[in-house]
Length: 477
Ligand SMILES: C[N+](C)(C)CCCC[C@H](N)C(=O)O
Ligand SMILES: O=C(O)CCC(=O)C(=O)O
Image (cartoon, rainbow, N blue to C red; front, side, top):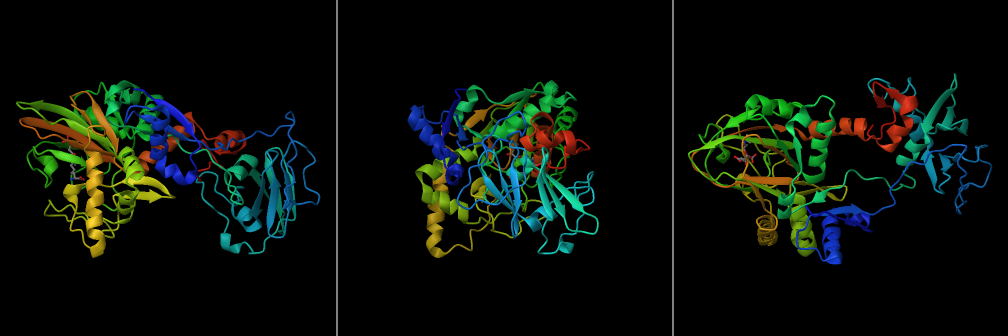
């Protein structure tokens, strides 16, 4: 797969339009349409400088609003710190001046009295902290900012410098983003992300990390060499975490017998969709393993990168993108007499869900869509025009990746990003698989990243703040 890595000065606001960068890069590089492109939004990645007496660093230049009075660092290589009326001001050698409210610092003390070292839960009672709490002393230490609080017995807190920088809010400092997303179209077929079953089942978890990293980056991954049994397939899924049970059962082994009230249990073709649009919380991952298909044809698998298609729509039809990002779509699952699923609240979830200004989830299954009500009359035709454009891009030859699965090769998709479907088929076709919740998936990935690719703050604090294998200062806490 031709991978073009481009570093573009894409401002954060357009990060959701990674596609824009994607498209821009394609124009810059005159790439064939839909060549998979790696988009790494170019920001000054917030690295975590190490403070040591060896390094000769410049003293922070004093911007107009920086403190002018004496500061507490006698070691010229350390950040300087000073108590202000409501905040502690820290001047980092790299030149930034950051301000931290006293109440905020006291609330985030992670000494063993204030923060349970094993459970990583807050012990300090936030509401016992006086609203005007103020340190009696601050001191810049090699490990971090040491703050002494007024109390009968002096209470001292230590805040690692890397943790203070990462959590800086006044001002916010640029942060290293999560893993890059590689957006793809049909050309992904040239080199689809794949790991082997034996790698994933290795107990050292390296293969498992590779598998989940693939899913995080591409939104899907194949697993080759899977023994063609439900037992081996279930063992594979359980390497990620516990299985999400639904009205379709826990680990499914299904065929076209309408054993469950859903068209998946028929021979019908299924257009590109994400599952569980009728749940408030659609599953995170979905694994499929085709165990057998005899006496018939068809039944090939369709994969589409919903983030890629959304990026094209955003770039080429921004109005349609905006409508699909705003208008909630009512959905249901009503094929089982004993259940009637609609999300809570019904009709609250658009096709394209955003979080912090970025596209976070694609939620689309036209077959499971209920009555489009709640739309203003003027919006109704606009929505249909927008979803028609969405479908046009979704079903374009450039977006669709068709693959014929066979026993031994499983595929797992990120159900919040990659849509899947199948062609109609004849004969006897047996498919097995399972759902995994989005939080179980993300948690396992976070644990593996902590082990194999720790973040700079965890790395820097590991030597003095690790309890039960996890830094008290892990940025996720
Ligand atoms: C359980 N299994 C995956 C076989 C079928 C699930 C039913 C799919 C449903 N129409 C949806 O889109 O969620
Ligand atoms: O049978 C297949 O290949 C896929 C069925 C499907 O899309 C689903 O179960 O959600």
